[in-house]
Length: 223
Image 1: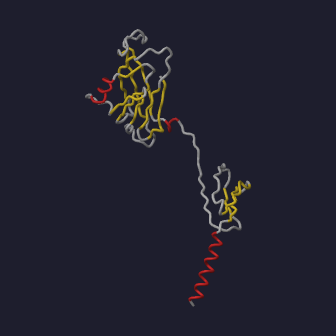
Image 2: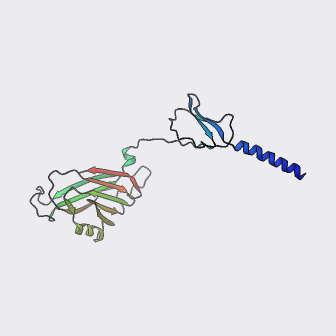
């Protein structure tokens, strides 16, 4: 009896090894529009290349008469075009102000030349609370040759009103951390700007606002 069981086990093992010997043709085809590709998998060529096809019809994967075991992974990707409401949740405005209403010429380096007022208002979605945003970031780019007055920024962060939670100046950008931007009125911050050096041809700078946990939904304007 033991001999018979051993022979049966060896026979099953032999059949299993034969089935696991990879020699497989994998055909990928549309249900109605014909073949897409044919992959021949063997012990030496056991990984098929990635292929991308439009989803114009149902896709069928078949092997026919083959040996071995293979796995097919199919991933469907849908590309959608977002609307401005989906990609931008803030209304922005930025106002460069001058103390005397004249051009920034003839001042000494570092002297306060004017002010910059940056404002944002949250635009909640239809299913969101109408009170305000979550923690938000204001990224104010400065025009070349200008610097922000750090005393004003410190007052915004630690003054009685404490309009901002924190600030950072990095690579010509003033980055402000805001606890929340209201939805019913504009939230505005204002600070003095000074001239480091004169620039003949000024390029526009950017003003960007986004929620800290959703940086992909950012709003940007030029000034």
